[in-house]
Length: 133
Length: 224
Image 1: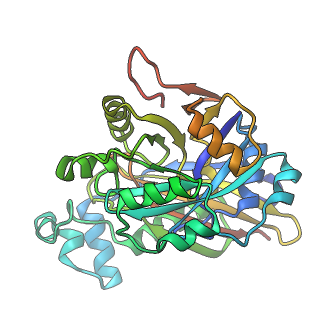
Image 2: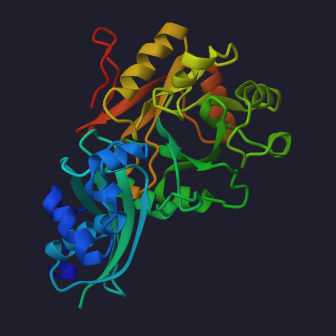
């Protein structure tokens, strides 16, 4: 993917990330965030949550990975996310992105980002600024 | 004409959309949308002037507010200095009857938004606290609703005899226009919008493919 190939309004390919328990456990271990609310449904419910939650930083990681799969070699200069709802592990999440602006001088694009939960609720929104060579 | 009556820009704490990018998106996607209303959270943005931007993209861009009450969130159209002085827009527990009465007294138009939503929706509060007689209009189609919430809004609005409009509740650019409101009249100012809302000559619409569709009277379904 080159800058010249990108147009305002383009959609990034939709992804459904792996949020199975083993994958979450693996991430929590690596990130040093092994908290019960991320890996134990009962413990999370005891805290008043709907179930064990996908860690917020992991959500950002999914979004970054989506961008890099769409445009390998690009540089994500900025990513800004808003956590609007709880995303439960072991459910189907849908990640999407759309190009909302382009800058020919800077060779950058702005991208809208969303992660939607199985119930249709948007859990994460955000934007990213992506630079091309 | 069709207006999205519920949008947020970067002026809202959780908004990530630049107003010009909304305009570019609407034109690039060729949405059948004539404009939008910025309803920033817990404030009225008196400073920003989008007249030039509106002229550049041939779109109506108006400003309003989304305030919070003890019965959920409420959109305020036609906000003026007197209304801003009347109560604290930043509070999250303004009494709904007071907000409705103040809006009426100062020539504005107030209507609860996403009323079918848990916690921040009007009808959830009706179940525990009873109805509010001053309510006459609600946002029955909201772009941020999950399946079932708009259906509940439509059903409850009919039950209470409320008129209904639509808005996307967009916080990012690509969400604008999913839900909107079709007006019988052409509108260019906030005063004209308030007048049109008072007249009741509007209908909530939903973007399906490239077309805006109204709610089916027969099926009571919400087009998606």
